[in-house]
Amino acid sequence: MTRIVMNLSATKDQVAEAWIWRLSRDFNLKVTILKANVDEDFGWMQIALEGPIEEVQRAIAWLHTTGLHVDPQERSVGA
Image (cartoon, rainbow, N blue to C red; front, side, top):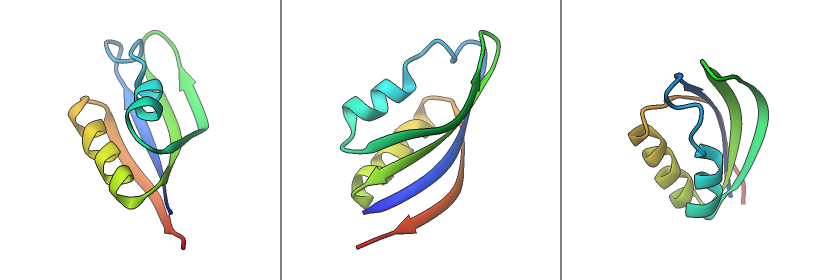
């Protein structure tokens, strides 16, 4: 299992989208919100993605296509 902690930032046009729902629905991952501050003008969230490395990589690639600012913080790989 791989665990990646990352920060996501969203602009006014992006905060109303269901990004976390899409991550949990479309990828075989455990998605944990560690910290967040979201209002109608701006939002940021620190999340952890946990699962098979292939799914984590697919999810990160998808996040980059959304226009969100994606900033990986730490990574751990377990057996």
